[in-house]
Length: 115
Length: 114
Image (cartoon, rainbow over all chains, first blue to last red; front, side):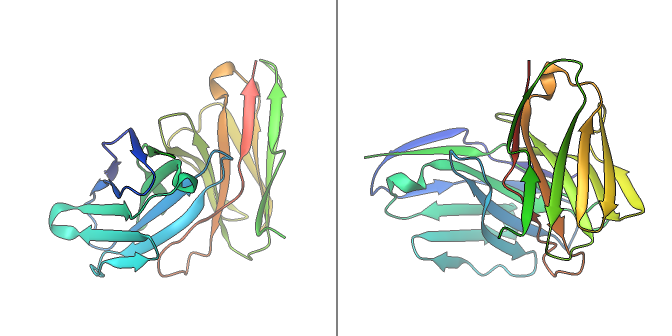
């Protein structure tokens, strides 16, 4: 069965600090897709990034960067120079291939950035 | 206009009442999903549909039913609501042909059962 673990339930940082959100996944599929979503206090899910299992290149988008390592089954997310607006719950998710092709979500990490 | 819409956005109801949550999409996608989010538990799949005639149960379908009225519409019903169905409900769509199996989410419906 597929599983996504976000071991950090809550993280609190001071503005301008860098912060890394961990994501470890389990799957027996050789082809799979990974995602990160942001859920601000308003509740909607905001798509941040997607990655397929064959592309281990790290990605940077502004203050956001992602480190995908198949050897450790991890897909970690780093926010550089955090801002108060980054405060949200962040979810890592794994897309099942075949069957329902549902998204399997981690339980989320609540990030609070204090001024 | 949003590609995936959900109505209502917020609903308070009483135990035992029947309630329907509606989802509409303009993305032209065949696949639609209903997820439930409980605090601290992430999202779990309730039902999914690959087309109008194909509806399947997800992980937590007990107490729920669905209807796929058209390609663009997928409704979730609680036949007799109970307090532990209080949650945030999301509808999602996907094309089924997208390389990443990406799903597009609606804004969510916050349901409270008293």
